Amino acid sequence: MEYSDKVMDYFMNPKNMGTMEEPDGVGEVGNPSCGDQMTIQIKVEDDRIVDIKFKTFGCAAAIATSSMVTELARNKTLDEALQLTNQEVEEELGGLPPIKRHCSLLAEEGLEAAIENYRSKQEGNS
Image (cartoon, rainbow, N blue to C red):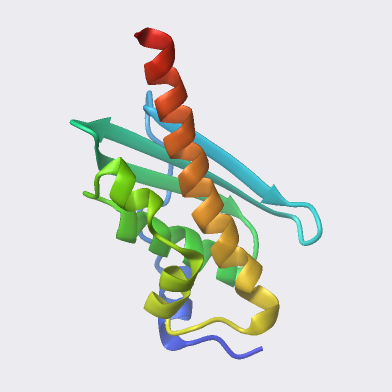
């Protein structure tokens, strides 16, 4: 399986990996068929993602796409972050093998789940 140099860089040197204390939103997603599991945490100020972390159990593509989606979402408003697509994640990484494209979709879904979790908490506080 051939990965781009950028996929390998984001796999070997992931950005924003880890956890944060008291995140404002948490998204947990997984793919039962391949076993990938992804958690994305966000910190939000003035409707903008000011910090974002991920923890992923999975293959090189799962880790690279998790890392890339956090880079793309950082400093965006929540609505801007929701506009990010798995295709943009793939393009930024220089493409993925067809059998690994589901990883970029998982990254998109993880980000969406974190934002939805944050918004549901906000609705509960109002």
